[in-house]
Amino acid sequence: MKDIGYKLLKGLLTLVACMPLGVLYVFSDFIFLLIYYVVRYRRKLVAANLRACFPDKSDEELKGIAQKFYRNFADYMVETLKLLHISDDEMSRRMTFDGLDIIDGLLKSGKSVVLYFSHCGNWEWAPSMTLHAAVPPGDKVEYCQVYRPLKNKTFDRLMLDIRGRFGSLSFPKKTVLRDLIVMRREDIRSCTGFMSDQKPSHGDPTFVTEFLNRPTAFISGTEHLAARLGFAVAYWDMEKISRGHYHLTCRLIADDASALKPGEATRAYASMLEQTILRNPSIWLWTHNRWKIPVKLPQEQQ
Image (cartoon, rainbow, N blue to C red; front, side, top):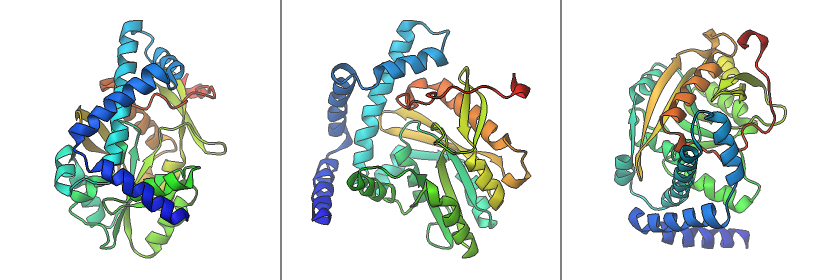
């Protein structure tokens, strides 16, 4: 019965996804009005985050950023739904890339890659990189992403189907190290995206650095994994060009994480992410309670 229910839900959402994006953006406009003015979804948290991160901006400027964020957030919802029914050609026009030759070169040389990514723009469209990659998935190469399973099993299954739309694999955070080790033993090169801008979970190794005018704890497990496996590390810099159009630029951090000093990759990621956000603050996920637990900078950074 659960399987039948899931197929009905997915079928219904796929019918909605068949609508052109121009029509879906009408729904997005309504979602914005609903979550911003009616439900007021986490507006106090968003306002507090923006005020602390941009102390020099006026109340009017911060309100403008918040409103643009909620509009982008609503767009993210319908654009993610659209992945249930979108052609490869349309996806290739709407999600473009620079620097994929860096990843292609590393994979061809036998090197696996860890991609630092973030909740900027529409991160669910990023796996469409396989449409542009010189080394296709499946030929001793896999493109992967790390995810935190949702509590609702039905929506977790739906998101896994959506995220695998372009041939990439999804690994739960708890098993990703084991999964990547297994692939390495089988001589499979991998390019794996890590969303490392969330608040660390309890027990996660962390690295504290200055970020958006605040001492901030970053998940350092990403660099530990990359260093242990000797993977290359890079950053994906996301831009929102216009409604329904995004661009990603790959920026190499190191071709071998094991050669870096502890914290070096995480600090580089934090610095690059900060520049992405400063360029357009409205595309980052401000509803996340990033600074729930206050932290202090290490003595050497004070």
